[in-house]
Length: 102
Image 1 (spheres, rainbow, N blue to C red):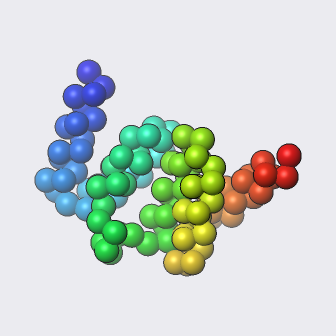
Image 2 (tube, rainbow, N blue to C red):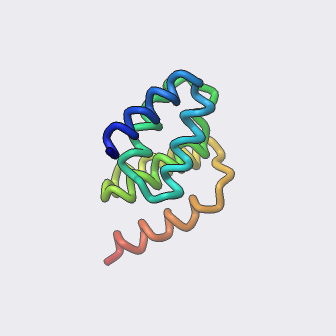
């Protein structure tokens, strides 16, 4: 089932290293599998070279998808502080500000 598949993904990602974890998280994010993406991104060590502005942008997108808007905003601020190169960052920040204004 899905649970077994997820466990398999996580074990596979750990076996092949953080580059694979980053790829898997990005893939899950593109499929709007927010919670799973967060779990996968959580496998990346805080001092990893993969923890970049783009990483924090992706984490923010996954948090937004799970309804954790304030945590998403914090992740996007980290992304901006680390010079995120993804165009999605501005769009998500705009949506967040518009939601806040309502």
